[in-house]
Length: 150
Length: 170
Image (cartoon, rainbow over all chains, first blue to last red; front, side, top):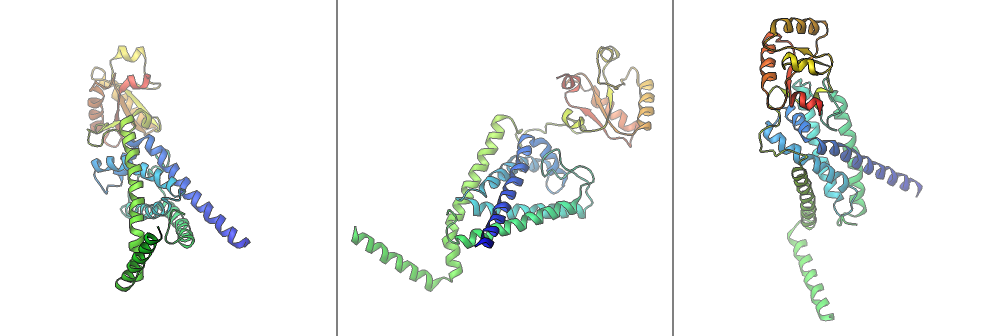
């Protein structure tokens, strides 16, 4: 019984960490979308016009998902979408690393990153978050496989 | 009421039998989850769109289809403050004497030769980002001076300040 409680507590902490990371990442970008537009464009994957659209919607999506993973009605879909976002971020960082781009991450808005971005750290951080997400999703599926709104 | 409940139970049982016989269990599970999953995705999408609309309506975000806020070669004051900057004042000498950014160098067409020598000396001692400013948002002198400087100092990172001196004063 004690072991089960410890495990549940760990998953709860993982859920709170995921929520905190996504909310903290979203707020500065919502506040300063212009800087985030430049950060997105700096990856040179999409053009500047599309970067502006991404900078408008992505921070709000991150905020909704960060809060959504705590709300029973939408927590499972939020977790799935967070997983997709994390996979996208890992792919983007790997791509920028392979192309030798020396750019700001833009992950948490203006203050983070900068020239000389440590890509291995960024990718490792997202992998850890993916592992947390796996634990959260596994518990949600085990607890109530058919009804996410438990 | 009992008859209605009985009919519902029969219908449910028939449906379950039909599903079990025609669909693999995993597909049936996916089908049963899909409407709920789609509903949740719709809620998340709607909340995201509402948030983005709030950003647009409150002026937090510029319209994505509008012209870029910054012209090529321009920099905002908030970004400039985060850099180690060598300031260049492109206004006339009288305006410069009336007030300028600390340690700025006066450089305009009238004093180009003396100004550029002073600038090069300072920059070579400590190479850093050069930002040129003029009076306000509407003046173009800073952009012209920045263009000339890029020819004289091709290795330097040079910008013109959006909003100029007015942005600094505000």
